[in-house]
Amino acid sequence: MRVYVRAANVELTDFIKSKIEKRVHYLFRHLNRDVLSVNLCLFNENIIGSESKTCCQIHINTRGLPVIYAEHKSADMYVAFEAAAHRAHKYTAKRLSKLERLLSQLKHLKTKKIKSNTLQINKSKQYNIGSMV
Image 1 (tube, rainbow, N blue to C red):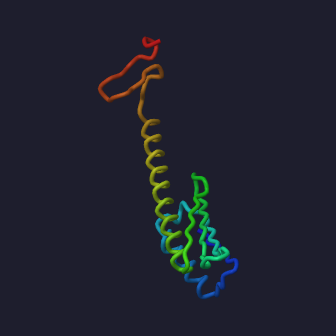
Image 2 (cartoon, one colour; image 1 turned 45 degrees about the vertical axis):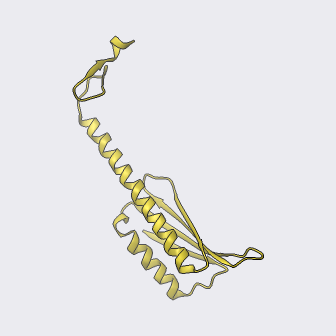
Image 3 (cartoon, rainbow, N blue to C red; image 1 turned 60 degrees about the vertical axis):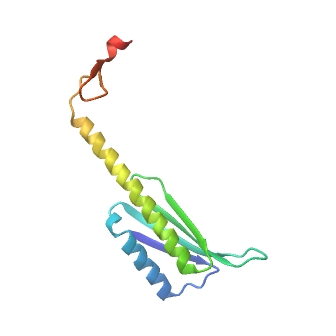
């Protein structure tokens, strides 16, 4: 898994960058084989007449899923990063577990022998498609 960290209008030292990379690796350690890359962007949003907020955007590229996107805005950079990272981790884990569950069901259906003109709705009932038409 590769982690890319970018910053715009935010002071990003090497120490902060390494801490962010370590935290991302820690959060996604059990999803490491499915997550290809994590792109993280930190930037300041300056709205006239209001407080400056740091925005953290995370894009996650995985095997078998479209790009997963999470974003959080906060006055504190660390709070914005943690909230966006937790949201991205939760959503990625949920989508990957659902994908694995669907793939295992598909594998189970392929191994199950069913006649080509028979539709099985329940385990106890079988309906002939030719007689329904």
